[in-house]
Length: 146
Image (cartoon, rainbow, N blue to C red; front, top):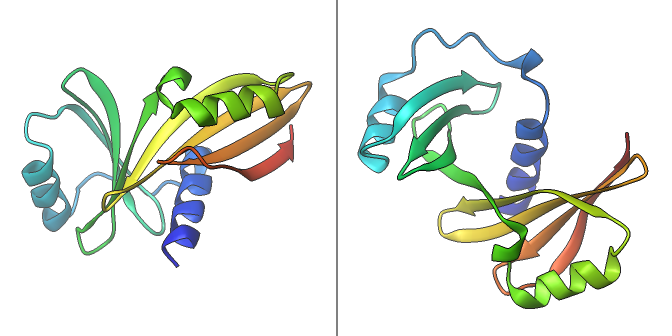
């Protein structure tokens, strides 16, 4: 169930903001939990979707996203990484199996300490998203035509 939720969250987060709710006020529980967990966060921008509320902010010089459910509980966090920060065996496998693809983006997603990475690749109008485990296991997450 946790993996299904992560997949849905990433798919929705990658989509456009056309379906975002109006966030003029952030629920007290969400804001209180955010402030407790991310003390020192700067430039906070809130957005809401059907299933979660997202805070985009800077913390210690890094751009971070935090996702909260309606009860104010932290669902997970994400941040962009450099491809070179992935486990070495994953980098080697991706370079070998997807040698004609260009790395577009690498994201770290943490759900209650269960960390995984997502790598977006492109080649001739085709997008491939790979999921990489903390230990370097690489699996195809999603493939689509642009």
